[in-house]
Image (cartoon, rainbow, N blue to C red; front, side, top):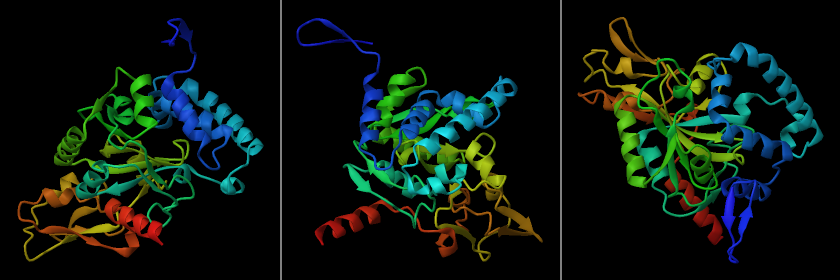
Length: 326
């Protein structure tokens, strides 16, 4: 990369500005080791290969699998050399390091509409995992839409591909600079429209967090069970997704048991039982997709303590402001 300095001479830099910004931000992040910085760079820089290998969709997966296993062993060894996290002594799983919080449409639209920088740390009650549970938004109006890595790796993906939103800095600039053919900047209004369009298609909104992404929220994905690696991992027993805090309820005085809403449930929580439309409370993640699919308004979302606490960004910001005053 070539930059021009004030003297008019050309200055050569091997590191892109967005990469430097990521590492600078990493340096300000507590308990963020050298291993984490390397992991974060590899994940964001090579995300399409990273995800396709993780989901088993890469065309060279059989060849790569032994190499990945070897790399994992090396990374595990490196992690032991830099044990600067309290959790390093515990056995971590993928569910502790990378996961999503299911959000109904109204909640995800509010998250995208934040107009100021915010810092909300250690949200254990809302994001119930050992790692990656902060919401730190620097320049939240910096939004990038990118081709979904999960969909891009499938032979017959759901369309459109460009449905994954990267939110705030340093993440937005990093993706835009390193994946210019598969990403573009969007406004908050464009982001809201994409969310509504994906909701209409029956796709679930997830706020994604990752340990390597500075241990915090960095993206919103709009997911379908046929393409999304996280949903498929969740279905196979790896709890990568946290429920929204709500559960769908059927009003049987209104419902005519047509089953239309069932076809849109990405978690297979709606089904006909003895001729009646029924919600499986264990499977329901409270995404709310089914609500908009019922013309009779026979379904609604209801708070359910067993499903966690909703990610209400307005409430969290208000609580943080109140705390600052005390």
